Length: 613
Image (cartoon, rainbow, N blue to C red; front, top):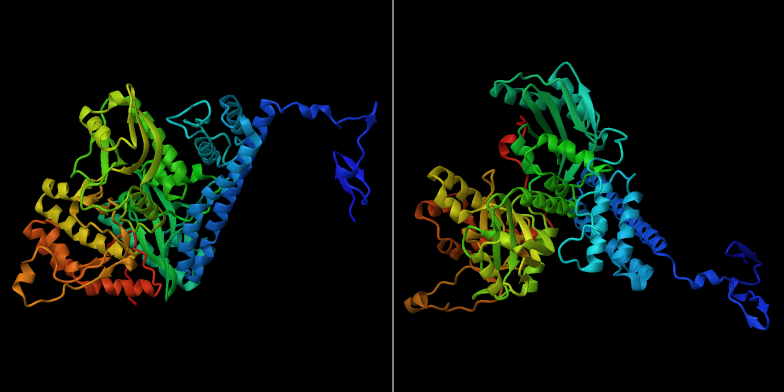
């Protein structure tokens, strides 16, 4: 039996602290230490709670990185199901840790849980505790998640939240660079060095040599076509490999006279083994990798700030917030988006107004002309024939958040209790919000409180785009519209409402989907052919003459409901006619039932390397 230690005193193994006699004086039992009658001080409580939050953040980020670390072996073994499972699991880690933490915080604070004075102290102590961490910016956002859950904060409170970061520049110096520098006499030698320096990709030596030749030829060919010096002898490449879906990426750059040349090598691992599949040398192509329509990378990051700055040097027009989101730090990306919005509001005077496009039956969508974001608020009531509930809409947005977006779904950031200046709203918008979204929006004398909304990157609605552009641009868009439906189908998603008004066009001309209230899994749908009838009255009847189940879908009807001009309608049928056949969708369903996964590459076919075999 082991000895027992209590308050620094050792007791023999035959007794415990509970068995110790209390000293007796004047016949009355005395408590061991009267100082414990006094409640702990605010400063002591603040220290304890700050330490709880710091330790919980460390658990979250260590677990997050641990899951991410599996990607190397998943890619090597072609364990695509495992990669997808890891991506979903990683999304849940933060909320799980926060749940456990909040129980501890509430127990520790007890009746002081809503004390602003205590939380002001907690924030001050916590800020000092994280100042030596290389992920301090993520730690600040994690802290904000705690306070917002405790207070259900309406608006922002700078004294208890990190509305702006406490550090205008990194509080810790970089211990080591996030990239390696390479030098060689020829482009081929340079690429060979880069490939050989990444054993985690498991490239056989013969593949390294062969791919170095192919990559060098592609780089030199593209640079010659631009009229530039074709040889690249120096490059800087991120040390860590970026994984997503069935691909891996090395992110690099080369200095040029007129700026930075992105050099991104895209890998796949198929029946031939791991090899370079494509090379990206233009900012727009690299920007698409980090698009708001793509799922998050799995990349092990120890100093996120430096990695984000490196990637930003490749794609300087991409907002830092979107890069954080692409790395899987969606909550901090959301914080950066909010900070960016505050800065933009301070230097502009334009007003919130109803966004262009058709009026939505489920959402009220508003924006500001100079800010590339729309805000979507759920209406109190939905027009016929919409049958989805408010919770059903929220559930669908959550589905998209966890799903492979395949470059075709706009990433939506969820916000609660935003407080905006009433003077920044057009009266027409305020009337709509008051009349049709009173459950969600509270319009006060000087403020507009938005209790729940989604923020998305603004795109041009496809039906509006068709009216604004020439025939050539419209033709490209309608073809990509059909491809968008196919890409979504391969990832087990059916948009539900295929009308062009629910799709949009990005600044890069890519067609994406953004209206999720009717989205569902392909495997849940029952795709049918319209039964034949010889009865003329049946054919012209307002109601179908055959039974229709709740999940029945008839692809033959799609084309007649899209409302496309005849020329675009014919073009869509010519190139994507299979979309209007039940057999096509049922074939996709069978492949999904067989657990086949499809990853839609985030680059054009023209970016792939040409191989003779």
